[in-house]
Length: 251
Ligand SMILES: Cc1ncc(COP(=O)(O)O)c(C=O)c1O
Image 1 (cartoon, rainbow, N blue to C red):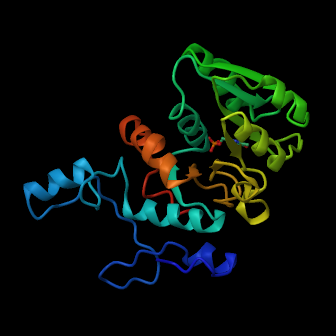
Image 2 (cartoon, rainbow, N blue to C red):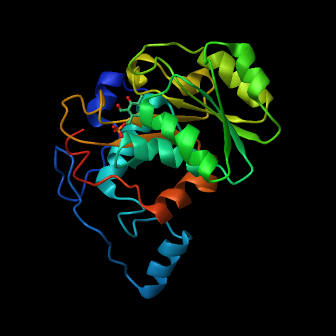
Image 3 (spheres, rainbow, N blue to C red):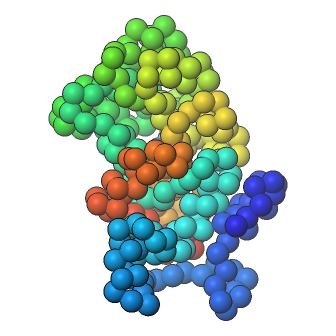
């Protein structure tokens, strides 16, 4: 387990390192779908979640765990789950917490595919959405309804660089009984930590600055252990937007 007090520069390189029995200096790629067990009983306990450990790489994989732990350390989040792309992260973060009849409020200045999730996909599944001017704090207050479960915003926005007051919107969301989800792709956790400003869930496209070299696609959702246990882990396990272990080898 990495020391949370390490400087960000150190966390970027060593955060989350899980060294195997071979003592490798660089992180290993665990190219495996499944894992072995000492007994059928142990396998059963792993699959039901009664005993910790890896079961199947759609659920979790040691190489991907290193990337997740590194991102959680950089963000100051309790936990992280990596995904195949940034859009898989946004889709998982939103869909895992809603059901038909719920309502979502979002800033209208969003990356185009995120607009599709909020404006087209959620309503098709019976989740109403309202798009507002993210800079207008009164608009967030006015849009909230008793059935609002989440606020969603991006700040700075890609590519128009519009800014939203994350701290103020988090307070409005919480007063309305909703969670705030922030897409922090543009700023990265090096320059802005939305959870420290009150956000409940943070999403990234790791395809952008986090890879930094234009080589691979990736995404990550950061949240509390409670949100992971209640919403996200089951969604990722059952729907499979998981990150390939090849990806953190590049990121
Ligand atoms: C703000 C923002 N959110 C989400 C995404 C989607 O990420 P990806 O292309 O990795 O699916 C992007 C990609 O440019 C983005 O800029």
